[in-house]
Length: 376
Ligand code: GLU
Image 1 (cartoon, protein in one colour):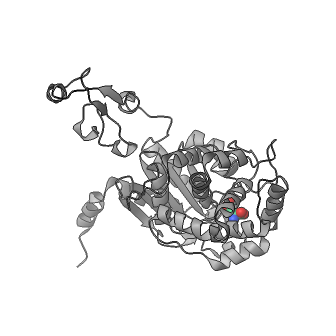
Image 2: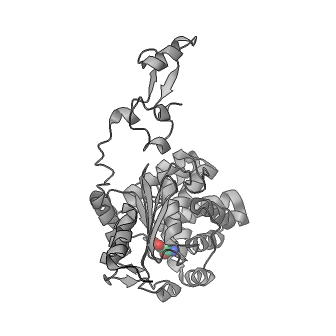
Image 3: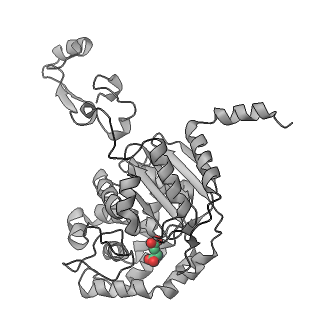
């Protein structure tokens, strides 16, 4: 039997607020048909422009989803942050940072230009991303792509496949990226065979994900490298924080400055229509809608992120949390005792160190330096 109107409204209101917010975004932004599906890789042009999915993963492992969150699409440039993190953890920061810069380029993502040291400007533009794939190839040889695919799967919490048609289409038309590869090789940034490295890069761009996957991948970035759904520590906090840094400065093509000014959440988009946004210690958002604006960013995806940031006041530089919680983390119990803790401390031979912030995972539970849940 169909529920009465008042009953169904009651049910809608009983949905979690985050889900109601995502529903609202879906309804409000679905009618927006601005932008165009990328077709410079011919196979990408076949995407259904109407598809629209939004996933949001919180750090306690909840995933909220609306719309086409199970439709697979190619990750494209959203692979770049993950492969950069992987390169940092695989080859060491010294090796990676000596080959690839971290400055915004101010150029389009596929610009054939290097910095004054003849290195890529940063790992979020094609030159830097191809250099990252080259570093993984240097370390893993012919197993490089599989190594990347598995690492991305750990971020998503499941095995990820490849769209062979998109891969073949990009490989057949990717001469601009080959030109970048040869430029990198002549400047000794790439040490291996250019064709082999480019095949790794093209394949990594053709890895298939969904909006749900990208929400979880983003939440893993937001959670210092721990996948909040599987609990696995996927990358080191060092690699994650540096990855979020370059996403902040260079993640959204030549809209990156505007983006961080207006939205204030580290993010990366891809020409397949995906955007992932990772707000440290809070959440990961993944959206999919293939129509792109003139910068190459998904039109509806941008709107979702803007709405999320403004509705929940999430700009990362507009935080009001008590600095004592996160900065003054250690103190000796003997100098700052609660009555119960002081009693325990006096029974010990040396003063005990209290760490109020064992990790940022405990953030939400740890609002006060005296909270017992935060003691390690
Ligand atoms: N595979 C694409 C390329 O290199 C990725 C572009 C993107 O998503 O920005 O052209």
